[in-house]
Image (tube, rainbow, N blue to C red):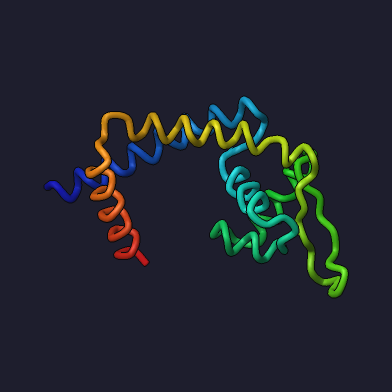
Length: 138
């Protein structure tokens, strides 16, 4: 059935992209997922761990562990909110800001590789279909 083939192709694409992306990120000493957290901080530095968890769609304990690792790598630092000590905010370090360019380059290369040979009008259709698939699942 064509439906089974579509699902299988999506699984294969996801697995291959994750592996290639993971290999590339490993070269700059971060892991898949950590880049998504950093991306949110590049957009808005100093958000809370709860906000970070919501924005990258990860459970709070997972984000807590991720932030701890990023702290160990010297990419972020945590500090208590000035007005509410129960809230922990995450801030980029200088090193965390410097890694944005290499991560962006990796993202761009991955996307170029993925979309090679696909025409602009085809991309609009692919995007619409993928958005519908995501909506179907939510």
